[in-house]
Image (cartoon, rainbow, N blue to C red; front, side, top):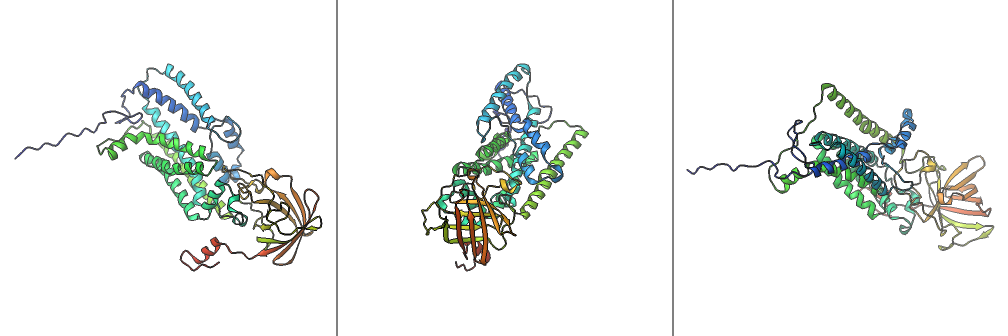
Length: 467
């Protein structure tokens, strides 16, 4: 019988990849090549500067938070930290400044630490910092999607705005808002990736999931002109650094179908240090998962932060056609091109009134996420919309007066003082003066309009539908 000897399988990689060499324990002192040490110093300094809050403004914001009445908006804003050197919208110029600082630090570090053989322990702590920083960013957005308040259902005004009057990003947000279950699914994916990042054994899986998910977010921001493309790419870079740790081993195992060995480097911790690690991780999970998740759910029950919360006129919400319109006593017939005459009016459930006319709107192009506390700062309903003018109104019930103020900061000086009467449930008559002291008179007739979204929700996906 022929003697068949098993072929020897070499499980040691023949060429180690940068930052992914197999390590068998905390005592591994295999010397890194010079280029790896230099590259590691650059990566370490750059990402520490990106991830660790060193900006005094962050700590001013931190200490200005009312911790006795903490809101999910406070946590969200702190979680979005990125170092900024320039005013205005975020740009990659901030990254260039950080990279230059990192290079200067590397020159000094290389000179003072030229005899170092390896950076296994420091690499371990870099991954810890990046894992938790990335998890914070994912949780911050994940919960406001899981409880679908990031992109709420369209308002009545949104539903009665022409498609071409909306910016690309507003269309994307409205499209996401009409499918809250899908929005919740996206949030669930982000939260899952964040939880996987909290444990070293699953961190690479979480990083891979993050790159796949946020890659789509990044491309959506580019395609729809969103303002979060820099921040989403920032989170992607953190995930790529984490993924690089196991990248060669994964490639060898899955693509080359060759055996590989895991990285088993573990720093030596005393019992007290292990207890401290467990305590810090528990505090992190309780705060960013437990407390932030609960606060976000509470906010969801109260209503989306995107729309104002002050209630509007009782039984007034809906779409109204303008059957009669006068300016300085002169009646203007209906015209789709008249820049003065109102075409239709919407009363929202909250204290917002919107007017559609042919008068130009200077767009509010806000496309970066902020969770505002005050109604006056919540601009989602009119940002990215050119078809209507939006007004907040204060109602004086005793004198039957409405004071309208244009909510768009580009038209902030526009105000109207109007008397309101309701001769019947379907009719509202407004009369008064505008900011130019011209007299205005308008008769509004409510339209019993049905919306596909509402009717489909009533009948279900397979029910009969008739508009």
